[in-house]
Structures are given as C-alpha cells and as structure tokens.
Length: 537
Image 1 (cartoon, helix red, strand yellow):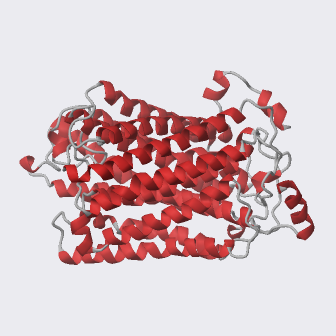
Image 2 (cartoon, rainbow, N blue to C red):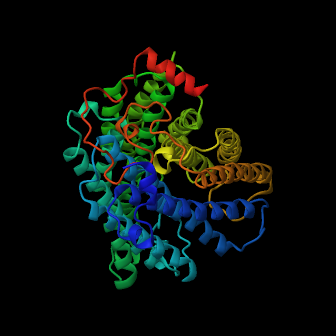
Image 3 (cartoon, rainbow, N blue to C red):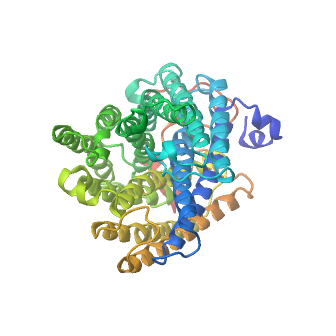
C-alpha cells in the first residue's frame, strides 16, 4: 500500500474512534497530549504574569493556588508521562520491531479512552471548585480542604490504568512480536528505553493508584490513614506518593533518553558508541529508581541513617545516566554532524539535561538540600530535567518522526529559528529561578519580597520568548500538513526498520515481514553515504 492510499483510506470520525491501528492511536494520543500541553502552558503563562509584581497582579491568592496546582497536574499526568510512550512510542515501537501492530490492539485503544476519561475528569475540576493542594496532594491539607480533590484523585486513579495498559502492551510486544532475526541486542535503543519505562509503569503505578484511592476514602468515609486527627500519619502519604513519583520521573525521562539514542547516531553518521552500556543503563535506571524516593523527604523527620542512605542512592542513580551522556558524546566525536532540527534539539537536550542533572547533586546532598528545599531552586531543577530534558527530547523525536507519521517535511529554516527561541527563552526563564532559590525565594508563594522582583521579571520575559518559539514550532508543523505528501521513506538515512516502509506506513506497516540480519546502527558503505550527502546539499 502506498502512502497516498494510506491517506485516503478509512476516512471519517468513526474510523478513528474505533481504530485498532497502533499508528492512529499514537496520533490520537499525540494531538490529545499536545492539547494538554497547550492548556498547561497557558496556566504557566498566567503564573508568570501574576509573579511580575510582588503583590496582586491579575488574580487573588486562592485562584493562584488553583492555577499552579492545575498547571502541575496537567503537565505531569496529562502531558509529560504519556507524551513520548503513549504518543510517539505507540506509533514507532511496532515499526522499530518490524511488527504489524502491538500485542494487544484493543487494550491499546482502551488505554487511550481511559486517558481521555481521566483527562476530562481532571479538567472538570476547573468548573467544580478547583483544587489548591499542589500536584502532590500532600496530607493533611488535602484531607481537609474543599474543592474538587475527590474528582482529581479519581482522575489520577483512572489515568494510572491507562499507563499500566500501555506498559503491558509494550512489554508483550517487545517479547513476542520482534521481526525474524531481531535478537535483544539488535533492537533499537528506543525499544530498550520503552521496555525499561514499561517495567516502571507496571510496578510503580499501582502504588500511586492505591495512594490516591486511600486519600479519596479518607475524605469520603473518614478512614484514618493519613489524617493525624483520626490516628493516621501524613508522612506515610509522602512515602507512598514518592515511591511512585520518583520512579515516575524516569517514566518521563527514560523515553526522552531513548529518543536521543536514536537521533544522535543517525545525524552523526556513526554507530552508537557503547550500545550494550546504554541498553543496560536503561534497565539499571529503572531498577535503582525504586530506591531513591526518600530524597524528597530529607526535612520530613526521617532518621539520619535513612537520609544518608537515600542521599547515597540518589548519587548512585546518576551513574547510569552519566553513562548515557558519555556514550552520546562519544558517538558524536569525529562524526559527520548534520544539524537538522532533530539533531539541534538532541544537542540542546544534552546541554539542558546536564544542567538539570548537575543541579540535582545539590538537592541530593543533605546539607545543601535543607537550605534549598521548597525554594525556586527546586522549581528550576525540576523544569531543567522535565522540560529541558523530556520536552526537548519530545521535540527531537517529533521532528525526527514527523515525516514518517504524516508524510510531510517541515521548514528547516523556521525550525532553526524556533529552536533558537526555545533555547534562549527556556534558559532565561529558569536560570533566574536558580538564583532566586539560592537566595531563599520560596516556591509556590503568591506574594514575595520586593528584592526578588527583578529576577521574576527576567523569568517572565523568558517565558514569553519560550512561548514565541513554541508558537512558531506549532505553526510550521501544522502548515506542513496542508502540503501534498512529500516525505520520502527515509529522509534522514536511518537504518532502523521504520525507515524501510513508506511515509506514512501502510495499515499493517510493511508489505512483507522484514528480516533482520544486522544491527540497528550499521550504516551503509561510503558510496551510499555520498548519495545521502548529495541529498543533504
């Protein structure tokens, strides 16, 4: 089936709503998560506008609390966690494996509908009183405050099932549907990253589900689990919540790292350096991530011994991440670097993720964390890891696979302008927050001391630059959809299986089942490279 016939087959809303095609489900996830990102971005802009002045600017304190809570919940649960695994992963993982679909197509569609249901429940809180607890729902405040806490906790419970279903599907697909000849060490590194992510999704997400369900039961039925007035322990909630939520950080970042592992060798024209080290580091991160939740609780009253152990484990989990960074840089060394949009974002990822990782060392150290805890330093660190890491990697993957997903090439000129604005705007926004936090500016505060206003102004102006870059990105990507299909099957010269079928792929991905007889990064001989160089020119 050609790309043109793919674009004309099965039109109509019904064909999308009941589709079992992993590619269409991935596209539906993509547009849904991007819509969530837009909403979260609007809320972020409202927060930055409010903080332009030390006192009230455009909303009252109660509204401000609800806005930053919803911003965090939308960005984390509706965008960052599902954006790469459920959207990009759903589309490309079966293609990378040479499979015709995921192992459980109906479960895949069910996961999307659970995502939509959970998203609608969470967004309904905006018109049913809002929620002002922060995205962590910390007790005892969350057990006693009004608003739509019950609705949002149930939404998170439903979203957890969506995440689990996706993880189950990816593990089964990886084990059972690999193309003939594709051994474990012939799998693309993106698949390794998705596999490690799926392990965390399956093992950690039920803990979050149980935690928010217990919170719901306490609010509705008065069960004394977290409320000290009823004989409960609020610190227990923190242990439960972070036992999921720190591994969830790697549900977010491991897929981003997996994208970078695909982009860098293709645009460096070199086999990935240390393939097995990168593959095993993904699994190592997944394992160690379950052991570090206590570094969020250094000031919660846990024992000195426990804090010291969690601090050690926090530094330990940085080692496999450093292995990845070293191997990516080594892959680029003496490579033939092609600075197209995916590679620009991959290099940007290396810089921003390095800042996020290095500033994490301050928060993993007991002495400095006590000073920096609950300040804007934590906000900046979190955004450098989550947005500078996950979101920038998402942009790298989106630009890399956009021609494969939609059969269209976008404007490279505009993509470079947008990337420059994103880089400048992001660093202007969040570097200022590192300085504020080190000087003691608390996070989440509605009013603040006038001495912090210049840095807040810098941060807000940076957010405008960042927003402009993202608006331009949306503009040229959407504009590309109006063109006739113009993407060749393999515009980047990649060697993984998704580039061996049409752009976009036919319904069952491949005309014939591919047979794998080489590694995913074994680039062709010099003659083929010269042909690709001609296409670059």
